Image (cartoon, rainbow, N blue to C red; front, top):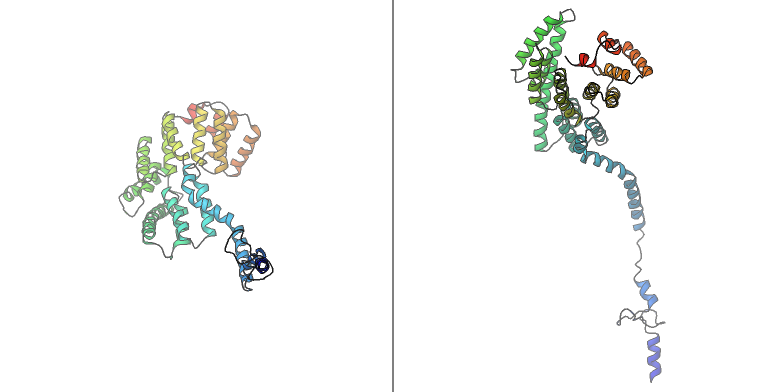
Length: 351
């Protein structure tokens, strides 16, 4: 009576009828272990293989492109932080590279324009706006911002064009004093013209002012209109330095270096302060940075030459002298007097 039951138990797999059902995991199982494992291995349709190959290729492509995309995103996301760390020009340059790699991204271009306008780098903004945003579809907010920036840029370039035209009319034969009077009269008219950039007008008025105090007033007006005018801020610091107020001068220079730590004029002026305070190593560091950043900026080579003289670097001094001569701007006599020890730093840099 029991033999048939034993046989049925030994061959109870309903699929192969050759092995007992495996109930180790499920007491109601009707399949042996082998049949159950085969049952759960679903067959793969033939058309899945080309799809899997395509997915694999796309994954590999994305993998190799991902580092550059992540790098571009980091530049975009950290741009303002980098500027706050004193890398304005480098940041805008790298962001421009990102825009060039993604020319169809209006968000990237708009970001570059906004940062350039916020920090007074109008040439960056104008180029990007004309190259990557003109004629493109923009959101209402972005479009409104670009219209505002375009208005600011129009006033800025119209003002420069007006001054260039006046300079051409005066010609090289016009006596310097007479030319200054004519330019000042023109600027006085322009400062009341709403189509002109007031910050530019105030800045150029400072150049033809009758005395240092008047120049300082014009520069302060300029900075009220455009706090990011680095040239005006540096020049105002220099006027304080010539008064002997080195602490106030340093404040103005440091305000520039806060956003661009390699700005040539601000570094040059900090080198001068370091010279006056007998911090010669610091003077050399600032002077070298200014020279490496923009050797053609006003008085950068001369300041570097003076600093080198205190470090007795005659070889580099001779090279700089030759460079100045080749540029058609040989060392001036008052600078030579300082280098010969006939003039003191106080007499040379402070009126």
